[in-house]
Length: 405
Image (cartoon, rainbow, N blue to C red; front, top):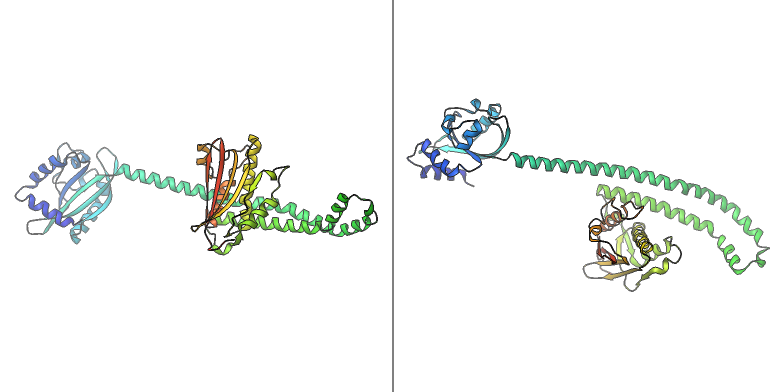
């Protein structure tokens, strides 16, 4: 906006009128405006103002402000700052928009959005300041409240992140302790097992086929235990990394490896601790599969969470099956996980990925939130659709790698 041009237009349109006549005319037009209009000379002396400005000063008549300076008005505590701005505009000839604090006659402190510009005479010489100020106190307070709320939210989230890391470290320690004990027992078992198996060779002929198979499987049990211990340590390490990076938004592409959907789903289903007959509730469509960049252990955790939730719901309702399928498209790849145990309500669906919100009896609410964060760390996402009384379906999307699995 060209303020100088506007004020030249204002001057020309009011040519021949006195300052009082100009202000009287403006008052008729602007008296309903919730802001002040004022004129000052080069010394900061008020030449006139509208009714709003007069009321701020505690005057019933706008003429009573004429001849006074800001040092003689209720906002005299801010007079030095106001005068400095006025002088800067007079010296530069450039209009400014500034926020100012004003102490009004009744003791209130208002925040004013002021637009000030040089005031020119008929020769184009600067003879003072013309300004308009709007009371934006409530707007500024609202903005300050919003900023304070955002800062409080940031502090809460930061505290939650620190607590989460402490909790994760504590859980990690608690999980590793029994693994260390199991590792020590396995070392003893490696020494004792060959002796036990050698003693049983003589009586092996009298065993049933089932007993013989069990005895034969004992020969490799220590290797299986070692493998499970190693898997658990990897699982703990990867979960700690995921928690740390998800709370610091510092996950890197180098942390991901190429995975095949078929293999990671099969590994999850083979490793999940199903109860009796639970595995038979799953229909897995094996026809379409793809590759993706991810972390196989974290993805196993995602499948574990989905299985746990669905099997819990099936057990609660006494009905339903689980359906797992994959699909490929030019825009990306999709894994769908659906169960027909009755779905959830619209209100539950709204918060289903919110952390620490659970609708299970002993749930913590972090499972699905973790799943979504994990999928996003892979560059994909996780969404949910449900029909209450019928089904719930989770859709896991993955970026395309340009080739199938």
